[in-house]
Image: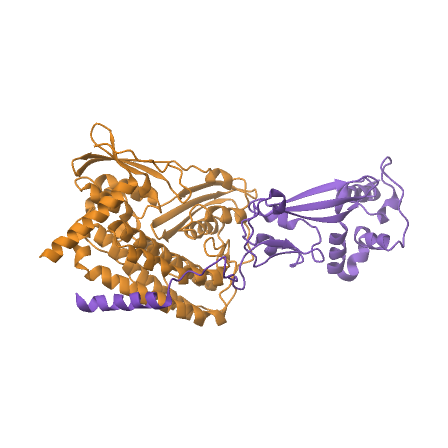
Length: 394
Length: 204
């Protein structure tokens, strides 16, 4: 049953990390999966060797749009590690606030996307509507909704003024109401239980073997989180919990992300209330030759930057490893034996990037094209309808 | 299942009454908040033409061009390309006068003509009276003289251009073909010539 569909090519304007999947399908069940990545090579590591340390901060910010702050956060810590620069406390708190705000809006974006694949378009619209207050906070703090430009070697570039803090706490309350409503709605809903439980389960052993990171790992029972294992900025000075679940299926991944957003709100509140006074920038900076590693828990996992500094004004070598690189190959294990209707959802559950699934195609064992990304989403939404009808029929 | 659904109904009612969250943008103009990083503009009275902004710009949006027009006169032209600007604000942070280039709240920058994205600023240059190469702009030297205070009078390069512009001293003769002399100590010299002249004075 071949269908002719116009493909949305590998280069989509909205993507940060394009990937290409090919599933081999027998009837309804997926029996094989192929993953290929490496489409969007932009030469960022090479460009970093021709820019000064401050200019590279802006370069790495633009690696990704949704986790725009994770890369400067890790890079700045790599340079500070290499040159032995200390950061004032207030700057550490402000960095934590920016990092956690980004986590909230990234998880809300994921919630919207996953519910679009399931067929709950209202949750899609509502989740994205509640991202707006978070983006408005960013606009007030940093001057821009997306690439914030807040990070600098030795501190932060802008301060959060005391008179703005009550307004920020108000907006945070509004977002918290929505996130807690969605969390309870997802965890209570029987249709979602039937649809998502047991789908695309990644066992603990597979997760450890594949070295997955972030919420994908924590949903499979691996308690890793860079904020707890190697604390940095203000994470060791405040109280918060790490969310770990055991099942590893899509339901667990959704629950981990939503509960993490609640924890993020807790962290931001503690930081805003407990921020010490003082300078926000260590002006006494001297970049000496050395090597440094910077780690940060991005919304998708641990992001890693390595910087080797030399005697010149430019970095000698800069190496970046984004978390999706480790999470994407886990599809090979989670998708085998599942139905085609679930394939779109399982690939989205790892939160690879915004439009990653639009480059998914399904072929039968003779390599003929059966379905494109749009059809797979439609299949997934139809399955939810069937599940709903079955539940009501009971 | 009834009770949980009521909290969702409240949200639905709110959406019904208040309508969508988005604003009707082209019809309703939305103003950016304070501190928004919009279009960057040069302010002529405050810019001294030192080109520090061009040096720090991460995307090389500001470029410098020195145009001598003969007889030790010329201009330095700074070009800001708005289509390359990433609105980071590094130029504003590193401007030596703090007011020469600033980011405004303007965000509607689309245009149909490519010429509209270029902004220029031109400043007069000061040339070395010995080798004839450009030193820096006149306003930059005036700014440096203001910052140095009374000690300006130890460095002829800092105080002579002001006197020259007020026509209090005559135009110096060209010194391009002869080696440095003692009288060159009170001429406007570029750093290279000043070092050569000082060494000649000290060591013969």
